[in-house]
Length: 338
Image (cartoon, rainbow, N blue to C red):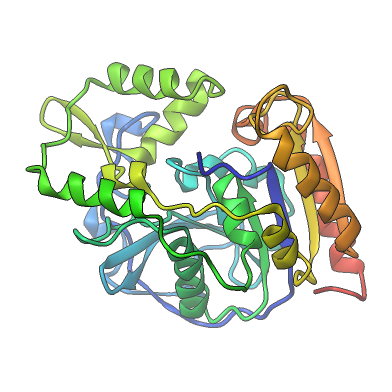
């Protein structure tokens, strides 16, 4: 559900401008934290408002929040604001930490901004009565880039994030009745308090639901995907995300959208991923024709197949880092930079 066919990069050039950013004061699960304290736990570590231009030098990581009408969109940034801007978009039910091990292996002259979609990671949950529509994720990208005053930039997306990155323009289908009905049914029931699990139970539950994750990768996602409470951890995700509305498009509609893409695109497909077009499952009837449509309709398209599974970028980032590095360097030197 909601997974995109692989990982995609869409490259654009932009200038970086100042934006008002509010640091995150959320208390995260303390996997790997020194002395039981997660980075950023102390509210006095950063002023209440940050200027984008005041972020640390390359190699450092900054946590921040982008104000939105329903709360905030959380994000983390790597590198210097003077670098080439890149927005990193995670997959369904994941969070910005999905890029923790990959970004340090990528070019140092980029500014990497990894955001948490609404209802994911440290971002605010949507109010009651507002379903998680796919197009809302696209609008969140636009909110973040507007706050940063990025007009042109590079997009890197994994799974759902790849679909969001590719959705540049076009009409969208109406919401499906069954999705609305399921959301109404969910809201009619009295909200149940989130289940408290021990750190190990929370990790095992995550690994059981995501067979492609290694234990180390699961711990990385839990650092941002769970909150410490009395007695253990609770997952951060809004349960309504399980009912998120990803209106299906026909292959013809997808092709119509992708024809509008003018950026350079790198698509990475994992051999043992859930969207391998050669796999014996239903996705091959859609993914393979879509892959062929990318190849025949885009002027600057590169397809790479790697060993690994759906979380290869997190489990074994070295497998994809080299391909991404080459793609980014080639794109920087190209006169047809889009």
